[in-house]
Length: 106
Image (cartoon, rainbow, N blue to C red; front, side, top):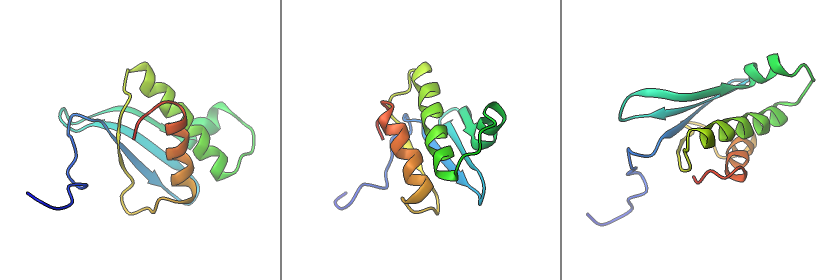
């Protein structure tokens, strides 16, 4: 098959699923073969741990760092990013770049 194969993904690589609401950001690492969620984290969890007032962008950065730390603990070093309908900008971009900076290949 010739052409662009960018849409074909390796199912052995865990998937990063992102949901962004007006106030919060939620991420999950999903194993599609076994159909289970390996890790999840959100800005709500971070707000409960840290009572400081932060911008949504700062929260996205922290969530990206925390999810990357959890992935490294499970020895996950490479992921496929599923950002659904969202464009790669703003909070989504900050989240993904924070994950990359912490040693995860995307």
